[in-house]
Length: 586
Ligand SMILES: Nc1ncnc2c1ncn2[C@@H]1O[C@H](COP(=O)(O)OP(=O)(O)OP(=O)(O)O)[C@@H](O)[C@H]1O
Ligand SMILES: [Mg+2]
Image (cartoon, rainbow, N blue to C red; front, side, top):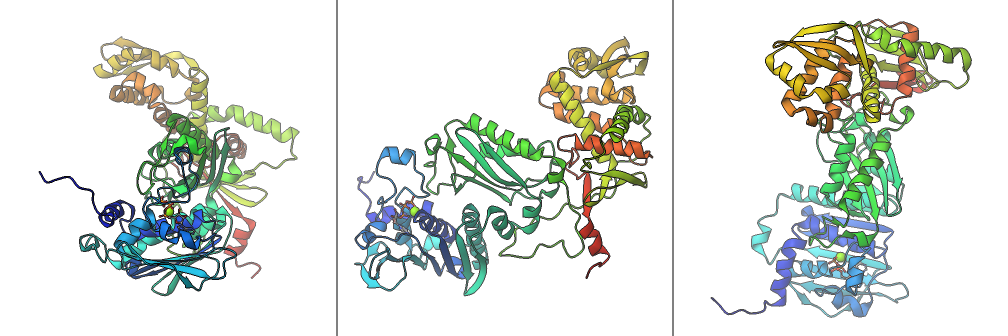
């Protein structure tokens, strides 16, 4: 074994650089974070050849004292923390004091900086770790950091760089994250002399529109929740505007972009009820938390955090989002898209969402006798309402007609509403079932004439094993023989449906997952299946009072803007939309 010796400082910095500046995009991220920490209001980024040839960040922040310039590029020298207590409550993006030293070890680095009140700027250069003496230079107040020829002295590393286009795309991504995190700060980006983004100071929704896409920003729901120690704010996709990839997911913890499993899981759970399984939510969310309750010093690139109380964070995020997604109809509604409107105006590398493509065909029509009674009470209510309080116009307006037994046309204050009958009713039944089961058990309705149903031996066994669970769902089932089940009562919310068919689908779930798991972990899936059975089918003619009853139920139901699979249940054509279709007023 060779003797142990201390490594030379340059080599130490080069080793550190392996983690901190993996590629041009990570160097860019470090420089942008330094500018924000310095209080910049405006930041300009210039890249040449994907940032490998040159990467320059110019800010108008507080600048660096001339005497401090050599320290800025020294390892473990920082102005941001001084003690362990500072580290444990660091509110700045940087605190390790190693980013510039690492960059300086693997590139040609220069810093020009001028503080307020200084007569001129000072410049310092650092090449492969060798630092020059500060010399006078010209610059307005602020700091410009330039990184040239990244990895010029570490050829092995250089080989790992991808094509210019790929490295630029990574830089653009890093830029987008930082730009999203501070909508009030102006940003610009050029690549090989061509401007690729220009962002004026603006509010979050406008910044999101430019960076993530117009579609997302226009249809996004606002989240705002606060507890004594946590705050969550931002924009999340309405269920109809989700995407096929995870790309448009931005979570900032105390202003820092992070990937965090706890929060991501909570978000996913909140969407579980309104999202098709192969779609992904899009979001731009800001979680603010007492810095003492989160550890950001987990990873050299600071892309992960550790929460002291991760359960509390999970709960908080889940509830905040669930509330936003259950927002009233007006906020959840989906606007139709017109030809030509599909592609959002392209800003810098538009990460736009594809608007939900409306599903043309619904589930195959099935006979359902059920439905009249499902609605009977609501129709009566609706008649009473019409007679007494006509003043406040309902959000979804009044039904005009039905189209091919599939859609309801209604007129409301804004214009024309089109409702997908089956999807809407499915949501209503589903939420009704959930509420009833949350309250206690599903109410049960005894059958005048019990149904004898031919069953397999497995079904008979599953019914016996899951008797208690079946009861809480509202079923009373007994074995009538080795291959027969007798249904004596059914869930009263679904009383008029084909009881044997319902029971069969419940038993199938119970056999696959076990009775108790079905009611706990898979509860919502099971209720969704029941709701689908219970919902009015397409190709069923409704009377106008029945249609109005459905509209009123939608207004009273949480998450009525989308069905259980995340498809929209209704769209609004505003008068202006209709006018555009007919080129009126042009
Ligand atoms: N754009 C800038 N404007 C003003 N001061 C800066 C700027 N960039 C760097 N500095 C100063 O240089 C110091 C060193 O920067 P560096 O990025 O190496 O470390 P850090 O930001 O303190 O910590 P980290 O390594 O976590 O980023 C900073 O603490 C800061 O005082
Ligand atoms: Mg830094």
